[in-house]
Length: 102
Image 1: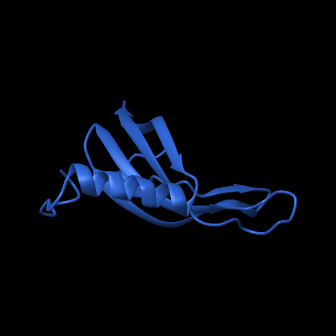
Image 2 (image 1 turned 90 degrees about the vertical axis):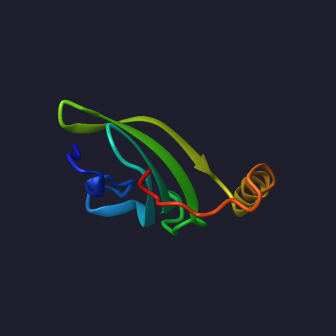
């Protein structure tokens, strides 16, 4: 169980073999509720090869000093990622970047 936001990860191993590899993460918000965007790739259990990268948005709630996963959504393909980006660009045009820890 993670006690700090920096400790939160999607990396997952079984019997010493990485099944989900965390490639990057962006902390979108911190606090008692935390949102993190992860870049990850999963290993295909049949072939043993890693699949194409995916993005996952996860929300954690800090309860009694430990972060608990409360919800998650995986962007499963580059096509889906581009559709989401296009929609966000239309909904929030010309938005000035702000701090990632709002």
